[in-house]
Image (cartoon, rainbow, N blue to C red; front, top):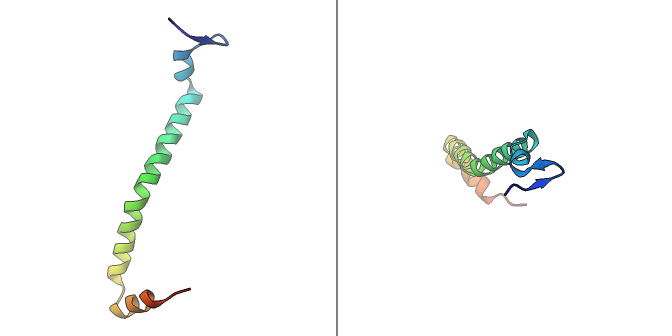
Length: 64
């Protein structure tokens, strides 16, 4: 049983370039969101090791 809407079968609609583009965009966006936390943590750890103990102490007590 093949479903059709407006003369286009479901399989043709799912395999269309527009749908494929949206799926790729969603995957890339999801990968970016998932990767952002470990990348941010790694950068913070790298920068924290380059700061002196005095700088870290000053940053810890700074408040807004």
